[in-house]
Amino acid sequence: MSTATNSAQYVGAPKLSSDEIPFNPKVRQQKSISDWIVDIVIWVILAAVVFAVIYPLWFVIIASFSNQAAVSAGEVTVIPKGVSLYGYQTMFSDARIWNGYKNTIIYTVLGTALNMVVTMPAAFALSRAEFKPRRIIMFLFTFTMFFSGGMIPSYLLMKQLGLLNSMWVFIVPGAVSVWNLIIARSFFETSIPEDLHDAAQIDGLSFFGYFLRIVLPLSSAIIAVIGLYYFVGHWNDYFNGLLYITKQNKLPLQNVLQQILLANQTNQMGTDTAMTGLAAQQFADQIKYGVIIVATLPLLVIYPFLQKYFDKGVMIGAVKG
Image 1 (spheres, one colour):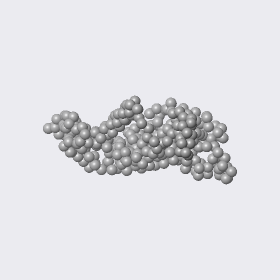
Image 2 (cartoon, rainbow, N blue to C red):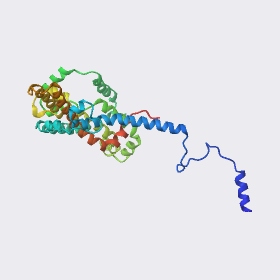
Image 3 (cartoon, one colour):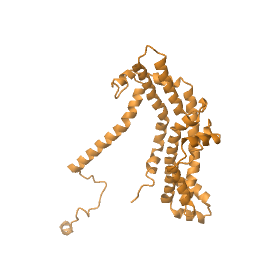
């Protein structure tokens, strides 16, 4: 009898529409044919993008220790062929490359540290509404992004400052990147609640204490992103060494690799009369591939450790709904 009554109650209960049925994430939703088609298209596009990004790097790696005749003939596509370490032997047998590595590491570490020490406090100060001249100062910063003195006045300035053939020419002139300054300022304005500053004032913290104890610990994402930008910029700095450095022991890695490459091309074409121009070019190409690996390997090693911060911080300043 009770069973019949319960059945009657359920029969008379109102039916819920599909929009009113609560979502249960444990219940697997059946996909329609159109959903499968969209998923397949998305996966194909993602696979094509990943292949387009990874394959050139993989090709450079395998070409750097493959026989260059096979590379030139198009026989090296996925796996190396005719292993040859000529390019790496030529580079690492030159003592200049180790000195270039040392110089680049010093310039990059000190330069990035100075960049962060200057950029983060400046961005924080320019983000505060209490700082009245911030708009004028920000305009002056932005002005330098569009107008500069040029190469010759810059060289004369570095000469008068005594920075020629000095490690400081890689560090001091680029202490602030206006673009990174704008990104950091936007982060402080949009991502750090003003309520935190009010609470810090109640606890008796000064602006400096508020910046060190509260703002910086909450800014790990933007610090990692801007630090990576600065690090890559210093590591790939080539023009400053070409323009301001004439002493061999002060050259960074990028300029040393360029000298090794040019010297190899000259030696192959000038000293070995039995070698054809094509063979000399093949050896030069192998050194080029090796130069790419030697110059980019440290960045490839560092990036995976900063990827989670980079993914989060790279969207800072984007339009939010």
